[in-house]
Length: 322
Image 1 (cartoon, one colour):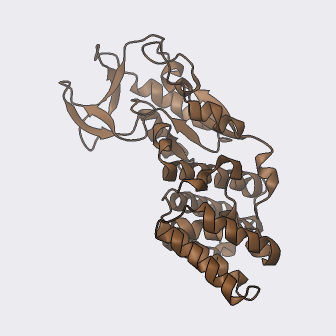
Image 2 (cartoon, one colour):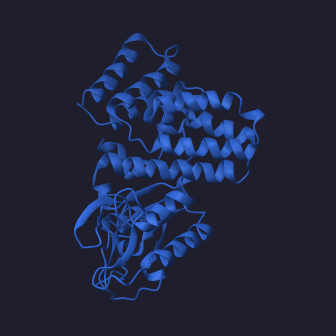
Image 3 (spheres, helix red, strand yellow):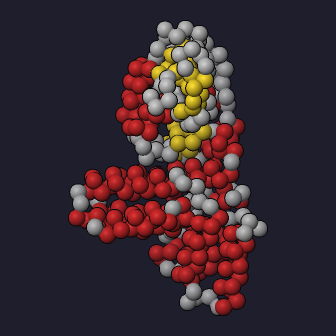
């Protein structure tokens, strides 16, 4: 099982300042998130940031929007005054933010914002007509300079699968920061992969296999290169939400570590619970709790260390809804 000390210290996570209730929006308002402040703040040390405010735009202010053609990186210009162009200023602010906030384990973003929107942000032609959609300028900078950082929009976390996926990625990245990046070595990298194997399998079987093959020869590569390659592919694999089918596959593999310790009837009960989950009859918490019960009693040190069995605090109830 994952170590309980993970929940003792809050994890640093960035958040769009308006979601914290700060009145920093263009109209002087905010978009306070009850879930972030009433639930996640107990586990995450939320660090608010507004790139538009940091770029020198006041409150209240004339709104800005993305303008450009499909295939080009859009510019940030004033909605009412097109001569106002803050593209370069916001790029500088974003790059400085990344440089000063490498300690973050994730970032929660404001939907639809021309700076903080994760996706589907409207991009306009010069004549003011809608053209296409893109990510906000700050988000594009985060992806460019900090590609491994887990990102999610606050409203998308209303979806139970996306909520669980984001928080899983935050805790996995925290594990990396604490146990690999803090004291880097090829051994630490292999140990990280060892305990994350079934979490990785549940999200992306091909990524699980590819990274396993890569690590077989990682000791022959420079450590910095091996760590950079592994982390980018690991976080990209985890960004793919697990499905009932992929969870069932990972659970069946985990159950294989108990086959010598359980009688036939117990094994059939556990397999039936996994199948009930795969078919949508129960939530993931049901087979996980059953399997964890037997792993605590009969599992090896290796299988008990798998983060897949406990990727985030049980009290958040994230697997009760997927």
